[in-house]
Amino acid sequence: MAFAWEAGAGHVHHQRKLRRGRRSSHYHPESNQYLANPSRSAVHIGPITRATIRTSAVFGLRLLVQAGTLLLLARMLGAQGYGAFAGISALAVTLGTLSTFGMHLVLLGEMARDPARRDYGLARAVPVTLMCGTLLLLLFLLLCHAGLRGAGMSWWVLLAIGATEILLQPLFNLPVSELLALGRAARSQLLAMLPLALRLVVSVCVVVLAPSNPLAVYAYAYLAVLVAALVVGSLLTGQPWLSPGSWRWPAKGEWREAAGYAALNVTTAGPAELDKTLAMRLLPLADSGVYAAGQRVVSAVILPVGAMMLSALPRLFREGKEQSRRTDRLLRWIFAATLIYSMALAAVLWFCAPALGWLFGAKYHDIPRMVHWLCLAVPGMGLRIACGIVLMALGKPWMRVCYELSGLVVLGIASVVLIARLGTIGMPLALAVSEGMMAVVGMLLVVGARKSRRMAV
Image (cartoon, rainbow, N blue to C red; front, side):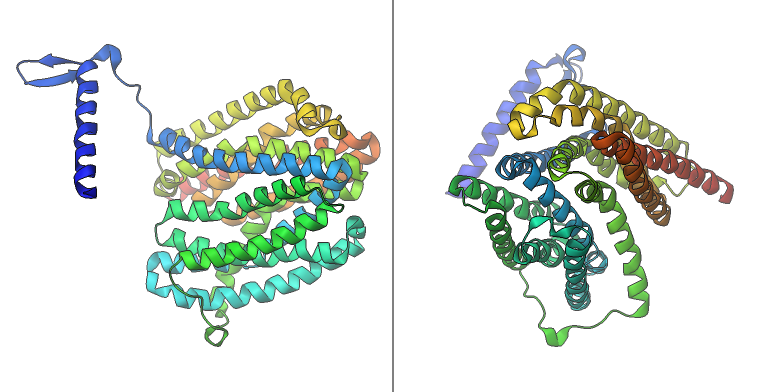
């Protein structure tokens, strides 16, 4: 019955497509065919544009979930509480990128070559993640109390936040990598979104329950649901994890390979996260909360640049290592589109900034002013993202590591100097200086890489 219903539905769908095709075409008697009507022909859309639209849809879903969580958390905690939470969690997220030491990407590479290599990769990824994650968790607790004065949080809350981002989230990335390596991209993306969706659910529950200490309840609940997400992720792979008796340490060459991935992970996350930790350290907590909320908005709406770059990545990998005029044209198109989109986005954000004050509430009355200053950083952010992915495709990952590390150093120096001279607005200006520097250096490195490639051919 089900097969008959599907066959019938397919036949009806085919007839509808045929009727639509006839309405948008004219009959040619000599060829006995319906030819497309030029006046109604579809506009040609290139493969990169189509892939960008599809990827942007996934990113858009993530954006909706993240925006909902941001609004709920910001309104629930207030500017001062959110400033403390954003700074602490940004530090945890950055340290968490080092927990796997790049072994989740080694696992992905092993399984992509041969799915039977799962046990080999997993036997090394799990112990490395547990060891590095535990050491980084201790470092996180030390930094929070020594350098950030704990931000007024208890040890238990800090431990919950750190364990979630530094231990559980990296372990959760292992089943995500497994599904991606097996070619189940859609299931992998949906699984990767599970913690974000659960975080939104936790935020809604905390707002509804209105406990006396909402941050503590949120931290403990998110820790619990991420444990559940890790169990779900393990079940979705269809294979159990290995017992501790099967664990092995990576060989010297594997450590070296993983170290490159680890460096890329931390430098990629650093520019997007550590500014909020700096803001928490250098600004009053209320001002750092306003800055963190505004910066999250700006980072979220720049996501289509990442979608475009991911869509262009396969072609860049195919052509980037060859002397090709097509690659040069593609790079010019990418950078032009990124710059135009970023500047248009900055203009839209500038005019929409007053509405953010209404969305976030009275405690964030200064967020429109903060977003106006953050608009200066938007073009640099877009170009920095584009340059980083292009350098990866051209086989120059360490160039990306170097210019992003230098950008973090510039961010630290500029924030100290500008905040001392200009006050609160020094933080968004420091971000603009850092992003602009990384964009310029990144583009120069891309041009240099292309010239060296031509000379080598």
